[in-house]
Length: 304
Image 1 (cartoon, rainbow, N blue to C red):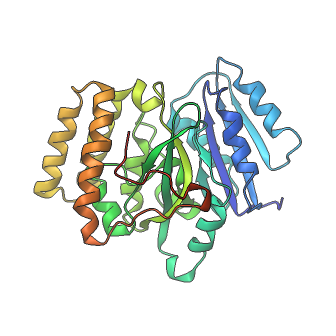
Image 2: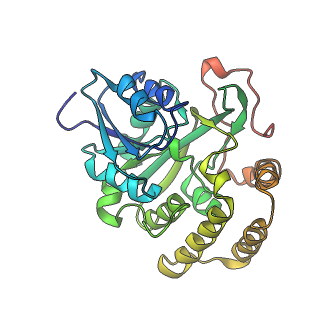
């Protein structure tokens, strides 16, 4: 590994001994090798530390930042980013998995001169359950206009799929630590002041949906953080809500009172299905391009 790797992978782990080993293995299996892995062990109370040690042992590209007590995710992520030496920052949640061509495909696209204005590049996701079984796909808007519009009613990125230029953090700062959750949505809208947002149509990540994930455990706090991020974008970053934006705020507020499981079902089978049927016609979305081993798997619209 070079002293200054092209990509720094930042992973935050808390009590994910069941999944973190597979997440680390998916980084080490990348076809592109000029990376460093920074695992922020966020005060886990299970055997996560042992699993992380076992899966990073002997690999000089991997470093572990051990925190004595748990910190909020934005603060822990910022510690990892401060340690990063790469030109790009790649995020990976410790319960998700990358496909082996994830970095290669995104870097090839981001390094093109025509894409130098793109600050954040994401991708499409295959959804898996706790056991790793495929349960569908989650798709995201493609171009900058569609990503920015999506911020009004959903998160335009899967965090485990984003590749962010280090320059973005240099110019606009890191995650806002006043957010306990929902920090990524606020960051995207802040970066959009000077950088473009984009998602590749390729499926490059397996995102795990399971009952005790952070967004399900802290469901109402996540909704509140989403509302706050959108209001901040309107006040600070010149994002005009418009009629549709105010409707989205009202509907999001109403979601606070839904049971989490029903809210998730409504999002996948209501919001994303509406987006697939109607917003796609604007040209800002595309059907995900599946890697060869995913051909024949359920496509968007067959959501959990």
